[in-house]
Amino acid sequence: MLMIAPTVFLPTYAQSVLGLSPTAAGFVLSAMTLSWPVSAALSNRVYLRIGFRQSAIVGMSLAALILFAFPLLPYPGAAWQPALIMLLLGGALGLFQLPLIVGVQSSVGWAERGTATGSILFCRQVGQSVGAALFGAAANATVAARLADAPDSLGGDLPDDLDSVSRALEHPGELSAEAADYLRRTVDDSVDHVYLGAALAAVLTVLALLLLAPRVFPTHVDDPTTPATDSPAPSGTPAATATSAASDVPAASATSAASEAPATSEAPAALNTSVALDAPDGPEPPADGPTGGPTGEPTSGSASGGPRGDAR
Image (tube, rainbow, N blue to C red; front, side):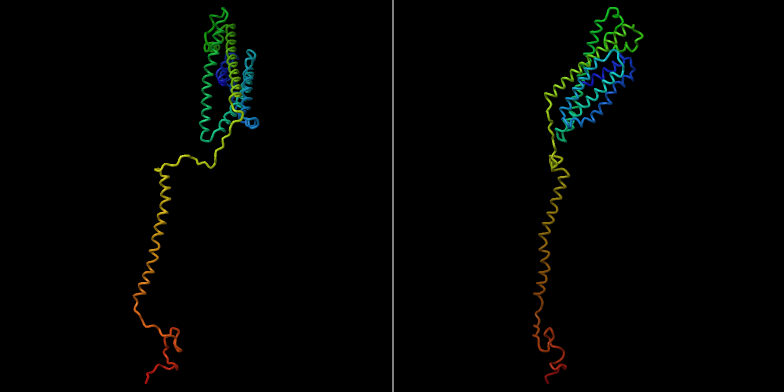
């Protein structure tokens, strides 16, 4: 909501009150975009020391003071004055926004961080939409009140709403000097009321942080042993089929091999036994004699070593 005040109404202030061109008014607004990322990048040095909640409170408190300082700018003033306000405001918002995002992300698991971050951004967009409606209503109400109280001498030269005032100030030569000055002061008052409303919103934000935000954000640590998915794969999926096939096939092969192995190893033993039983009986070899060989059979010679002769 706070971003609506500078992004919507500061260019109107710079062009209508300060008389800057659209390009120069954009440079005045861009000062906030220079300090915001630098402050957000360095905010870890703050929230690691004092915590997420305290960092956000410090940043929003500074933003409230800066927004309250905008209506104190002199009229019409110089361009560097609102640029300095925007530079300081960007630094304060950077110190407020990033610690809250990191604190919320650290309090949930990895699976929920996208949802948590998306919820923060969604709430921011809703706040900006509501802020645009409220601040636009406040600015137009201020312009309408100022135009209603205009002097009678200027009544015929004045428009009747904020857009018509801005368009009229784009060509100030068509207006009298008194009418142009009155319209510039009208725009200045309307933007001042917008910044006062944004400062009030900042104060309410600080109160909400004090009352609702936890003093210490809980830290969620994911268990490294937890699987990436909590639900098992369905039985019909290829992964389950491959797993069951890989677990069943070796067991079946091993079982069949174990049951068939003894029959295969006993076959040669049975064949050798049958051959041994069917062989014809032969004469038993004689015992070793004095002249017998190693196998008990006689040698080709007689006991005297001569050739074997007849008994006669």
